[in-house]
Length: 253
Image (cartoon, rainbow, N blue to C red; front, side, top):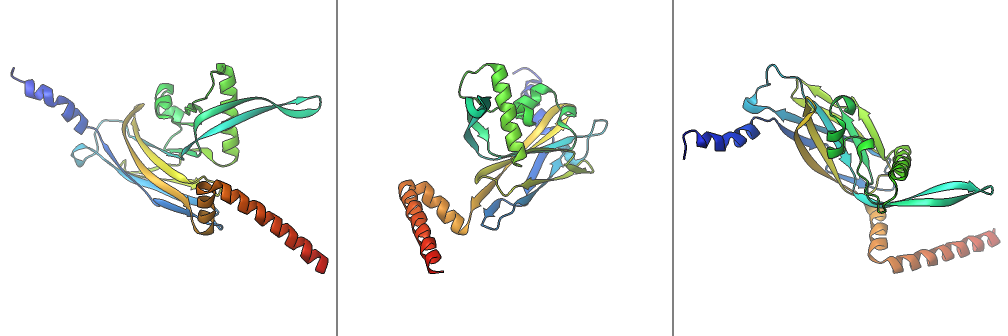
């Protein structure tokens, strides 16, 4: 082996160790949804560990981006047009996998932190989501439907951006708050944290969050999922019984 070869072999390891490391956490790992659930607020916080335990001198400060995503789902978007005075569905586009919830918080606006290519790779921002359309529709059509989908989700409070919502203290500690609406779907969520400097993602870390129904809502959801036919029949018979009971009470009053 030539002299200096061990140093060359260790160079990638030394370079990896020279990068800062994220240590993230979240205030709630499990969120229970009951009948009285009106939403929740997640606190995402953590620390930036620098090589040698000291801040690098002469380098630009780092920024933090936090992305909270819900489980992906298949969505069908329909476009309506007015034909002969009546609104009818004229076209549609199905997405194989779109996040049911998406929230992004950052220490600065995303456009000032990374370029378009980096935003697309890490899906940083609503206009950089990879929604996977199921058909080979023309690009202008895909863009139109994607804008419509994002707009619908945004108005429902399920998609949103919060530039400047991440607070960084002494270039070491950070925290951000993300609101979870009452209409949030259940499932496994992910909280991704990205450390950015000079337009490059230096480190990333992920924490999981479980959102599930509890109490009677959980029983109903499980029954509908495990025994769909029995659940449907029970719902029909219950509706008939309640209608008959209401009529019987009305006749007696």
